[in-house]
Length: 130
Figure 1 (spheres, rainbow, N blue to C red):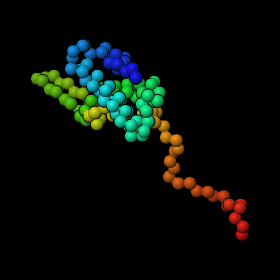
Figure 2 (cartoon, rainbow, N blue to C red):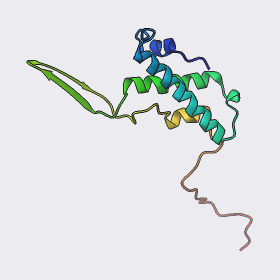
Figure 3 (cartoon, rainbow, N blue to C red):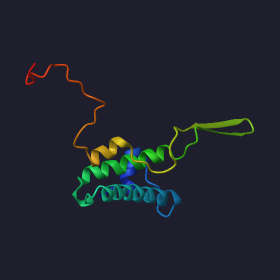
Figure 4 (cartoon, helix red, strand yellow):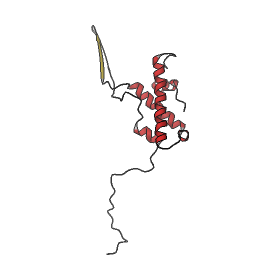
């Protein structure tokens, strides 16, 4: 598993935070949080983390962290007005923590069978005698 702060910066299309800054520490913590969430899910499913495809793990960690950086909290709109100037920013709602979406879990731990609501056989059974 090789997701780094530089990897996250590339995914976001911006430069990595400077060394020693709180933002760098946040990114590193969020990477660790995503890895920990994967480790806990693997343990609950009795799966060895080492057996997971490392490229898939890296993808999920990268996507979870970049999503969290883009949408860090559950604020929907923040507006600041100073004198005659206004600045407003709108965020999509988030859980306020690094979250791994269900489709990303499916990449790491694919289910073997798809669930169906119900199944109806409309053909008569030819083996039943009348």
